[in-house]
Structures are given as structure tokens and as C-alpha cells.
Image (cartoon, rainbow, N blue to C red; front, side, top):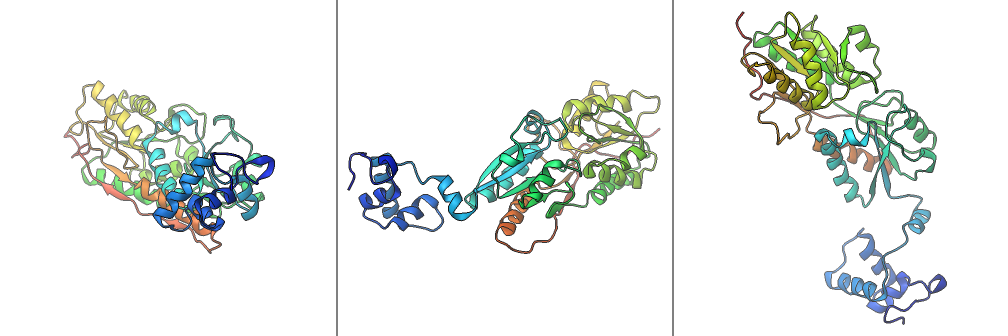
Length: 359
């Protein structure tokens, strides 16, 4: 029996799991369960195994060998369709990832962030052909036409989307158009008639500017497209402003195009909470009161601790949405038949909306 951290019977004298099991006085299969966590092991047994591993300097089974035995890498790829810098400034992205990671961790798998360089916009990352992943998740609902999704599918890797890309094995979505229509109808019921709309990008790498409804309908970004159409269902002539990024600064810049015109709106519908926060700040900087002079709505339902208001918004329950994506991945890898999932959203009224100001 090896003692004092000396090499055991493995290749080139390397300490093996069998060495650890012998020192702990348990079966190799029991020691394996302690490291894998796949089944519960008595606490005193687990403590003996871990103490033996520490004494021998054993860090755990080789994950590569395990992958070869089981035909699985134990890795779920989460494709980030924006720059990492921008993605992690967005609390919606972080919340969805948090929910997803909870389920992935429960599965005993790791989560790999994979930047999308297909359109020359994401951060540089590894090629799909070099990524060992059991499934791929496209969590930001970017372009419907995505080369990475096609590459994963061609390799037989299950793909889960959140509205995009096309060809995903399963989509986890909400009714974007109906949700946007409901928040626009709230403003109509409050008496608003001059309403502007600040959209997320219609494509990656664009700039902030006025767009036509035909440009919106031609977009391959389904979340932006469907939310804008929902607003136009209620306000047929609402000006449409595309923001360069779905963030605070772009919301501020987009609001300027609406508020500095000859007939500024009495309400602005923004397609994300960060955009809405930027709109509110732009209004305040122009001496406008929110909501007395201008009502503002968002979309996402995320926590913005630094924002002093409570936005009227569409709450996507992003952590729950991330968990729903994770459960779809779990079911796919278990070989189950899985249908598309529609997750609920909630219209949440805050203090950024009120009756339309009198003329």
C-alpha cells in the first residue's frame, strides 16, 4: 500500500484512485462516487477517502479518461453573441446564465462561455471543431442565421435557442410581440398618443438611428423585430429608433433623437431595462419629470440597484428562464423527446409611467 504521498501502481508511478481506495479501506467504486458526487456516500466514508487523497496528493480522476469512457465531455457550451464586455454589463445576461448554471451544476457538468465570431463582432474564441461540448445553448436570441449553430448541429451536438438561431433542436421563448403589445396598450389606456420606441439592435455592428418598419420586418433578430411590431400594433406611427447596444449609453443616445424633436413623445417604450434607464436619464437631463412629463417602460425585469426608480417593465423572470433552458438541456442529454417551451412573462407596473400630460 502506498503511504506518505509516494507513487502508486498507476502509469509512471502516478497515484491512482485504486491507491486512494486501498488507503481509505473502501472499494474503488465507492471512492469513485465520492469524487463524482453522482450518489450519496456516508459522510465518514467520504471523509476517509478525501483524507487518503490528500495524504497521497491525489487531485481526482482524469476528466479526459472519463469523457472517453462515457462518450461525454461534461461541458455545456453557452454561446455569447455579443462582446463579453457588453454581455456581462447586462444584468439580464448574468441572470439567465445564473439560472442555467444552477441546472448545469446539478447535472455535474461545467459551463463553457463560447464567444461568437461568426459575424466578426464577438470576441475571439475557439473554433467549434475544437470544442468538446455535449450541448450548445444560444442564450441571447441574436441572429436567426448563425454559422456556429449549423456547425454544432452538423456534429450532432444538441442546440437550444431562445428564439434564435433557426434550426435549434428546441427553442425556449416567450410571446415577445404580445408582451410588447401589452405594455404599449397600458400607455394607450393612460391616454398617451405620441409614443416613441427605442429598439435593441436590428443587427450587430450597427449605429443608433431612425429606422423604418420595413427595416424592422427585414431584421433577422427576432426579439427586436417582434417587440417593435407589438408596439406598432398599438401605435401604428410610433417612431422607431435602433440603439447600437441594448445598454444605458445607447438608450440615452436614442432618447435624444426622440426628445429633441419638434413634437417629442409623451411616452417611450424601450426594449430593455438598461435602455429604459438611459431614456429616463436623458429626460431628467432635459428638465423633464418622469412620469409627469414623460412615461418610460422597459423590458426584462432585472434588478438595477443603482437606478433610483422602479421601472414599468415586462418581467421575463430571467433566472427562471435560464433554469428552463438548463432543464431542456438535461432532457435532451437524457434522450427524451422535448418540445419547444414557452415561458411566461409578467407586466409589472412601476413608478415610471403615469397619465399622459395635458396639452
